[in-house]
Image 1 (cartoon, one colour):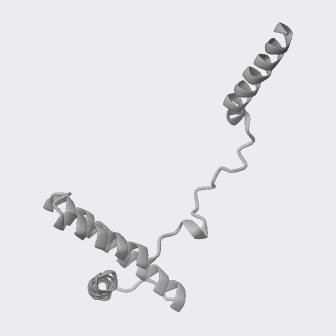
Image 2 (image 1 turned 90 degrees about the horizontal axis):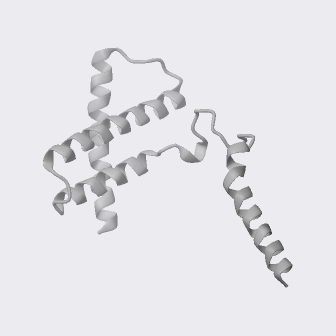
Image 3 (image 1 turned 180 degrees about the horizontal axis):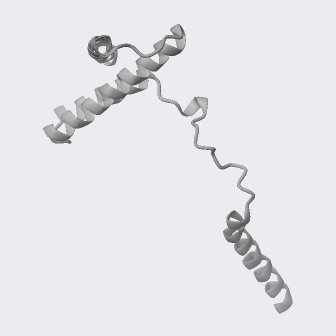
Length: 124
């Protein structure tokens, strides 16, 4: 009877050892190449939603004004870049001159604010 327990205990220990050590010797098939997969990319709607949640956190006094303004500006810049990237891909245009780029960034910021208002209305 003691041999049965020794065999079962040995199998359990070997199995645990296998599961602990096996990731170190894997072939690395699941590693990413540095580019994002299609499902991992953020959409404008997700960025708008993140800004909306950020504003809610600020209004509930969970974050400071400085952090809120910094993070909101980062999200707005990111959204403007995403919008510019999608428009460039759709229209196949090259980069705009600085004056037009600033106007386009201002338009993007206004659109972000409009979308935020729409999301707030939808969420109630």
